[in-house]
Image (cartoon, rainbow, N blue to C red; front, side, top):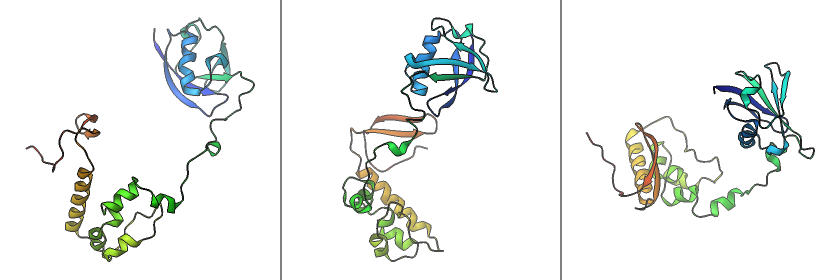
Length: 210
């Protein structure tokens, strides 16, 4: 059977998604796939086929019929109507109702094993005296700035010196290497093969084959 591209929408969720379906699938199979997209249980689904103006063409009421048995065409709308009377429209869309774990700036600054703590211990970013001197600020300025989540920028200056920047980069690479353990899992990005996962087998200075 051929493939058809349909725009999926739902009455109880803010979902609009372009999906491809095999016309040989039964409506029951289509509902199972839609459950993962719209979050509505298959038992609570009623499928409506709409035209590009949103007008109803038909209701796909026979779960045993194939999708191709209905007049489906590319870019028509497959609308999932949630027939559960207790379902609230958009009940999973309002993130303000989701309980979140929040920290004050002081609480985060006092924690260990965080990105901020790692940078502070290894003198990276704004905690690096060399980086502070590279932009014309006193070294102690980089370590005494009050912490806020957005306060990772260095003091701004008009001069630029590439040599200290190279030293800073090398220090950061050394710190990253020191944090790696042989046998740990890792992920790298290769130009020829994209993202690849593996295991750290060796930690040392980087080198390049010619």
